[in-house]
Amino acid sequence: MAKVLVIGAGVMGLASAWQAVRDGHQVDVVEAASEPGGMAAHFDFDGDSVERFYHFVCRTDYPTFDLLRELGMEDRLRWKPTTMGFYADGRLHPWGNPLALLSLPRTSLISRLRYGLLAFISVRRDSWPELEDRSAKDWIIRWCGEDGYQKFWRSLLDYKFYEYADDISAAWIWTRIRRIGRSRSSLMQEQLGYIEGGSQSLVDALVQSIESHGGRLHYGSPIHSVTTRDNRVTGATTAAHHFPADFVISTTPTPYVADMVPDLPDDWKQKYRAINNIGVICVIFKLHRQVTPHFWVNVSVPDLTIPGVVELSNLRKELDSSIVYVPYYMPTTNEKFSWPDQRLLDEAFGCLQMLNPALRPGDIIATKVARLRYGQPICEPGFASKIPPVQTPIEGLQIADTCFYYPEDRGIAESVRLGRSMAHAISTAVAATAKQQLELAS
Image (cartoon, rainbow, N blue to C red):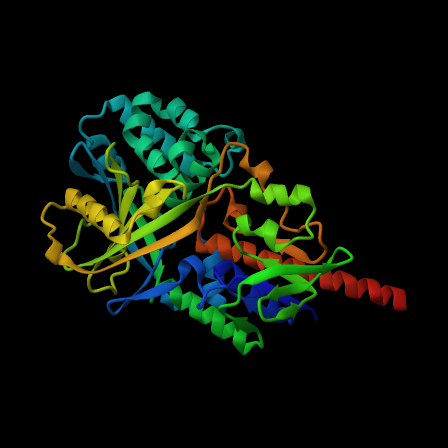
């Protein structure tokens, strides 16, 4: 068939490689890190295997279900009733269902009803194309009013996007509401899933399956440049080796693309450079004591610079201790992104103590600070028109990263969907070439 080179061993790259080897291609996967998984990779947290950046499964993550079935892992998918909290006005409130919304104090009834109406309609709409050119702020204020925006949304946007908060796509926010809203067993009950053993179970199964089909994975091998000849991709080069290929799939972050593919036209290089990202820091605690009974807590406090808290152990019940993520999203130019780990740990633990005043430093078993420079694309209104096609002007070269999921958010299901789509495109191209050659020969 064809020689295929996949750049990046995150879930998207591994899904591409898995589909390509299944289709009969010769596949090499080249990864800059020392292990596979990308944002889904795990680390040993004092005896527990957990992600550096938390993940969960929703009821509509169909590409994930299909892949688990093909890998013989469908029995490792677990579903659990989960809850949400909302910290505001110095108190932790239940959240995420109609009764919690109606019982929220210090908020006008009209604001609560308008918020509920926005959530109800967002969950039930399959498409909302007019949102593509609107900002989330304007859209939310139109539905929820200024008071509703200030109460329920402003802190979430401010402490995820900082100076970009007023210019985030309404379409991007809507798809997030819809995905979570559709992961319910009833109007009153949210239901989320996880893979037994965490995302690493899926990563390990993909790696094993790729290798068992003859694919090869190369770690600690950052790509120096993608090579071409006569506007056709020929492979890629690391510091120590050149990997010849008929087709190349790149899943590395778009900020690296312009320098990595020197033969791209200048206007295409500018398209990749124009896509902005913010960084993410996950401050992770392993604790003797549960912080809250909720999987996630949205935070609406002006001087508390986090959008929320995720307590993974309230989803993954196989974990014996409380595992809590305090995520910080911000442009990497923000001075807090360069704070020492201990300063972040001190501030984050102070946030947890606001949610649960009974917490004491003695409850801490272990800590971890995970950083990623390109953690989240900044999806402004009209973002769809900024995304280049996956197929580049260089024949045989496809490029995509998490921003290509838009308007969907980052997630394993979207990684699987897009990764496999790129591999399918290679098989289609190979089949078309073979048909053409057969016709010429006859």
